[in-house]
Amino acid sequence: MDAAERDWIERFSRHLSLERRLSPLTCTHYRRDIDALADWCGAAGVGRWRDVDSEHMRSWAASCYRRGLSSRSIQRRLSAARTFFRFLQREGCIRKSPVDAVSAPKAKKRLPGNLDADTMARLLDIQGDGPVVDRDRAILELLYSSGLRLAELTDLDVGDLDLADATVRVTGKGNKDRIVPVGRHALTAVRRWLTVRPDRAAPGERAMFVSNRGTRLGKRAVQARVKHWARKQGIDTRVYPHLFRHSFATHLLESSHDLRGVQELLGHANISTTQVYTHLDFQHLARIYDQAHPRARSKSKD
Image 1 (cartoon, one colour):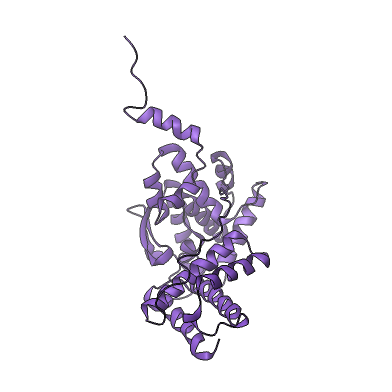
Image 2 (cartoon, helix red, strand yellow; image 1 turned 180 degrees about the horizontal axis):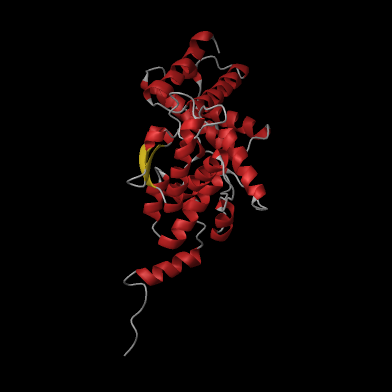
């Protein structure tokens, strides 16, 4: 495709960043997928976006499959293309989106792993003193206590925590803010970290968690510290930051059976996303139904 057609990708990227205010990482993923589509169109002899039709999109998806991309990756690419063509439609570049009639391949649903309550308690039972231990203890406790995503944790500023109210304000996907409770153990760990943080943070640094250089702690550093403590605490399974979120959701749901409440705490837009975290089988749901629904059980005969 020529420069004029590829300029639409630049406009789309600005639209995602400035109008929709998506994260830089999300914008990068969209850009990469649309660049791949543009390269394929060029190789297929399709020179303009208005000439792309549904058969082209099916052929593109098929070519991705032949190159070994997973169903989930193809779903993501088609989703990016759908968003892009709707943008072009809004801007008057095309009349109809060629993706609307294309079905994405179904991906196998993978249930997220989680740690049981006893294993999580052993992981969080960090011994020792010192600012690094205090910081790491606060990180692990907060991940599990509030079910935060890794990016939500690393983006936290000191002012985002309300210790008196025992809540934390986080900015999730799509720049949506939500208020999440902070548990007692996490509050204790955070308070302890905050007593030593001023000596560790660089002047003017607002980040809640800082590195040895005094600047905001990065995602890879948090991943490394989680891995370090899992190994030190003798946890045999692979432990990573998002596993705390899975465990948070699973343990809450097992205790409360409140799917909508867990959805709100996780910041999911759709409850179907929350259901993936539940690990509830049909028999368990049937038991809940029998216990809760007024007409679930037949009346005993006199």
